[in-house]
Image (tube, rainbow, N blue to C red):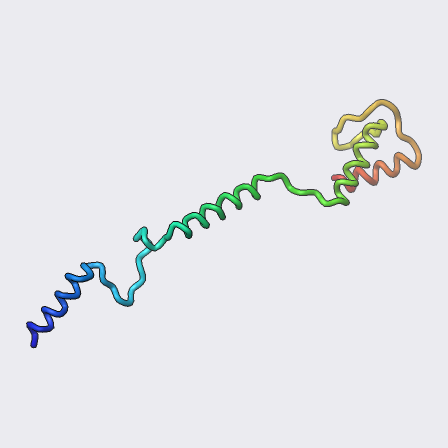
Length: 107
């Protein structure tokens, strides 16, 4: 009976080789665990994350509008406290107040 069990167990090893594991998962070191589709999806995810991280930040409409107003003030001659170049001319009165408020928002 012992010899019969050895023959049966050796038959299993001969049929499936030494890699027969009925209830075990493949190890992470085994390359067959990562299918080509899984590798492709992982690569795609890494590339997408890299592209999104390196792209310039997107400004909201409100921010774009504020920057546009601030650039107009600079063209009109508003003296910037941020060190931006200003155009020829001077800004006075109500326009000066609006430009100062716009500069605060643009910071």
